[in-house]
Image (cartoon, rainbow, N blue to C red; front, side, top):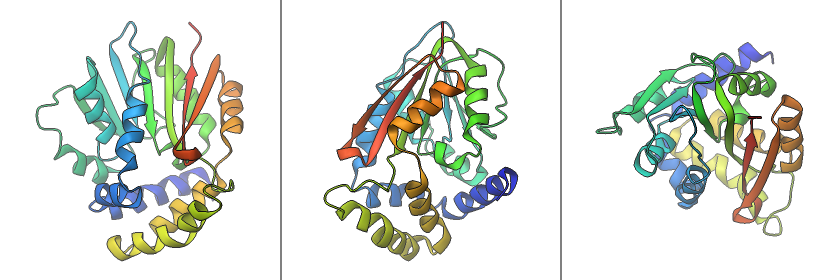
Length: 233
């Protein structure tokens, strides 16, 4: 599938499940998604701009956590799915520094060097080719800025003696279908997790893209990882 067709497919999938997205995130992760996002937000650093880009912002949970925990001047919340952003806007209330923007991670509608940190939670899997997104992220990051990725580890690694892998491939898609009535969306989730590179491979991918330093840390026995990639100062 070419990148344009893939992007259209992803947008349609997330538009279709926007109404159930928050509930299923909490339910399918047994509430761990709240902890994972908190750890992601803790990696944010400010520099000369005071601005943050929350890429693949979805229903704005990360953007809201940033607004509540950090003193950001502006939080640009960019997502490809209009329905996901619309769902998230219903939760913003008094978070006036969040600016939802429908946009493509490969063609960010932002000027050069305008943010100190880019966060992306469970979204880098959905952007192909990832190298295009890395190029754009480096463009909008101020010198010395950082990219903070929260993403599932590869489903090819056995976790909890294979119990997690069984859950990923057999339980998660069935539960997702039961609630969302979209059989493709949660099978897509399982398939993309399985196909995703291991943490060290992703780290090398980020270095090859032009980041000067990359660190990563497993959470929940490696079900998810946080990668922090630094742009040269």
